[in-house]
Image (cartoon, rainbow, N blue to C red):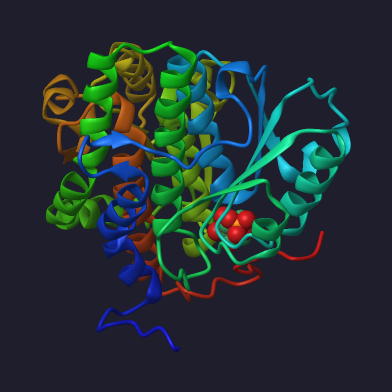
Length: 367
Ligand code: G6P
């Protein structure tokens, strides 16, 4: 049937508010209720024997895949290859024996991602896909579908499907790490608990709406915006910049913070706000020094951080949104929410057509 807006102004606003439920429902399906351990469906291959995973997707799903790469590499110690589908399709990279292809797609219909699925299948790879719409073309052509339970996503710009994708990928990394013996049980329990705690932490983010709106007032004045992240939060900077471009039509670029001095720093002045995705994890000090460099060049620093990070950013950041404290492991999932909310609030100030941005389609089914 028809999906309504339930009193929200836009589908995007409604779907942003559904992040906690989307994450919770998605995790529920893949958690054993008794043991509270991740319990994914059985793989059509032995995870301990997989020599490499090739991740492919488009748009926001690709950024989810970038986070997935960090998790699979660091937790499960598995080599990962990743590219956007439109490039992967024509690269003809050599495929290892017993390799696994991991496709990520909300719709399961994106033409380029489907094209890669088919060519990697031909190249002998096992096909695993992470899909919101399971009864889709990709769903039918996969060896294994890891479903999300984000519910229908109507807004053209992806929101809750993104955090649901990340939740599945985090669970997959834990599952592979267990199978490959690269993570002890104490660590597995800690990371799993942080994942299962996410719906509550995600719900808390909405108590920060006023701070996000204050940030949006600065961003809405800009013609160009720079998003910075580091490590596992770099893809969240990319997601933030993409969302801003898509729905507010403000030009935004995302960089790994360490690359700032290799080019983008020349763009910085008072008119180019810098949005930092900066939880106080082990890489925080490095991000802080990058932000100090930007500040010294007149840049206005706007930061998503936690209470500890906010203290350290005093005198550097003009505005902060203070996020709930979480394990670094789940930070990219949690921080995606306010970053998307920021784009939404800016679009409201700009008066754009939030749910149907110009020139964009929900699902790109032609090449
Ligand atoms: C379009 C949408 C994006 C989405 C991308 C991939 O560009 O506007 O929000 O991330 O397609 O879609 P998929 O359905 O494959 O996740």
